[in-house]
Structures are given as C-alpha cells and as structure tokens.
Image (cartoon, rainbow over all chains, first blue to last red; front, side, top):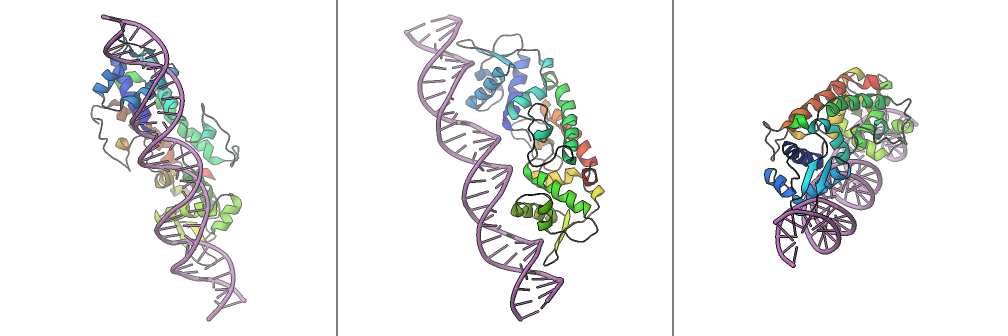
Amino acid sequence: MLSKKPQYAFRALTTLARHEGNGPLPISKIVKEHPMSVKFLETILLELRKNDILGSKKGKGGGYFLLKPPEEISLAQIIRILDGPIAPLKCVSLNFYERCDDCNEISCGLNKLMAEVRDAKLKVLTNRTLRDLI
Amino acid sequence: MLSKKPQYAFRALTTLARHEGNGPLPISKIVKEHPMSVKFLETILLELRKNDILGSKKGKGGGYFLLKPPEEISLAQIIRILDGPIAPLKCVSLNFYERCDDCNEISCGLNKLMAEVRDAKLKVLTNRTLRDLI
DNA sequence: CTTTAACCCTATAGATTGTATGGGATTAAG
DNA sequence: CTTAATCCCATACAATCTATAGGGTTAAAG
C-alpha cells in the first residue's frame, strides 16, 4: 500500500504540472486546490526538491516548480523517493537492495517470484508519468 | 513491501507442501527446517487455519496440514490473509475496498493507474502457487 | 488415568514506521 | 523594513509490525 506521502505528492505534482511554465507556485496555492496540512506538504516537497524533481524559489513571489516536463517524471521515481522500494522484498530490489540474512537467495523460490512481481509493477510505474495523471 | 508474516508463512507452507499426504506436521518440525520464533509462527498458522488454507489436528501426534493441493493455493490468497490488500490503494482494492474520503474517484487519475498496478501484480500472484515455490 | 506433546486463544510489550506539528532561520520582492 | 515565502530540524503522537507470555484444551500412549 502507498503511504500518504506519495499520494499527497501526486496531487501537488499534478497542480504543479498544470501550472508549468508560469513560474513558481507557493504551497499556499497548492493547498487551496488540495486541502491538506501545509507543514506536511512542505516536508514532502522539500524531499522532492532534494531529489531533483522540484526546484524552488525563496522569498516573496517564491514557490515550487517542476525541473523537468511532466512526461519525464515517472510515478516510479516519486514512489521510490517517498516510499522506498517498489519490490516486495529488499533482496530483489533494484534501488534498495539488501541481502536477506535468513534465506539463501540462490535456492529460495520466493525471491524469483517476487522479482516477477517487481517487474510487473515497474512496467506500469516507469512507463506512466505525471502527464498521465493530469 | 511484504511483512514478515507472509514471508515466514511461505517457508512453513513449502515445508508442509513437501510433506503433503504424510499426515499432520507439528510446528516443532517446521521450525527445525526454518529457524524462527515458534510462538510467532503459531499465530501465523492459526490465521491460515481460520482462513481455510490449513487444517490442524490437536494432541500428541497432531500438527498442521494443507487443505488443498499446493497448485490450488495461490500466493495472492496467502498475502491477502496475512498482509491485507494487494492493490496500492484501498479505493482500487478488489477484496478490501474503501471509498477515499478526500479524492473524487471518477476524476482522480491516480486510482486508474493504481488499478493497472494492481492488475499487474495480480497477474503474477494469482497464477503463481505454492507449487512454484517448491 | 496420568503423562506428554501438541494445538488454541487472548493479551500485551517493545520497536519501528507513518503522519504530522512547531518554531525559528533564511531569502527576496516591493 | 515589512511581508511572504521557502528552509531546516527536532519532536510529538498514533498506528502497525514483530514478537512474547501464559494459560487452556485436546488426544494419543503407556
């Protein structure tokens, strides 16, 4: 299950995508369209800025804006930043790999099947972008 | 990410599947093959019994056994029992549906995409069974 | 009919993660 | 110099995950 962070993020990002090219959009405007905690959204957008999804401008007239066109921002990128691995197990994760300490990865049948699940999810999540969300 | 419960469950279930037809297998034997907390595994197997995956026999010489052949028990069934929804959002879950109170399901683009993810996962998880795990 | 080995049931503890909130610092427009 | 915004970090609160505890019930075997 997706946690709230990416869910809120997607709402904010669609608003930012629709506003593309018109300069920075402040949180106050985003929240007007999607009612939610300003402070919580702030931490989310900050995280997206640190991961090069968003840019920001401080001070009066400032706000956030997309660093790339919406069709170049996949759902997978956002989910990985805010929720971590897309794979059902760390031992089959592409971006968050960790060895499992209590199963043998070579003989373990589960990780092979979970890798299939990972690929099935990724096929959707890397091909779908913010553009599909608008 | 899968929680520990289904992970442990899959290990126990493969042992039970290999033992199929030879009568009930006690927890003590399962744990000998897969070291883990006896008590924790007990609560897991109990949950599977209540959901008609396992049968059990009490008393000396008792234990657990599969109620169906391994090829009729899909990974999806086990995950739903122990981890809940397979869909990334409740509002697109087939077995655990809940209306989202803060988004419009008709106009919300996200749930359409998350339904695609759900279907991609289910395609693997309903076709793969305990048989594939052995 | 007692011992023993097993499952049955419920409560709860401890750790981790998810969901925010608060307060102040920094920046820049007007 | 005032105002409106982001930036940063700490922390509170709640929910879930992981596991443990302890006693109850059942049934086979001697």
